[in-house]
Amino acid sequence: MERRKFTREFKREAVKLIEDRGVPVARSARDLGVHGTVLRRWVREVTADPQQAFPSRGR
Image: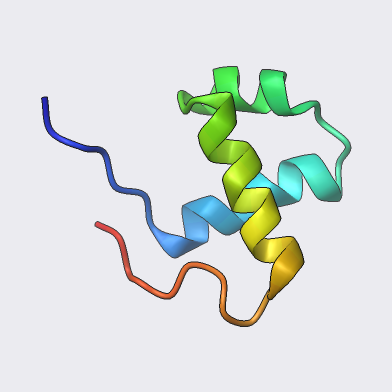
């Protein structure tokens, strides 16, 4: 099975759902088709350093 890759924009929009709109992580993960652990890691990365979060381009 190939590892899925997400664009920087997708990750930022996913984090916005949680931070700006208050959608729970579990619901966001389910709706977006990603694991909750992955989504929580994205939130941590943006919280730690918003400018340097997600440096690679993804797919």
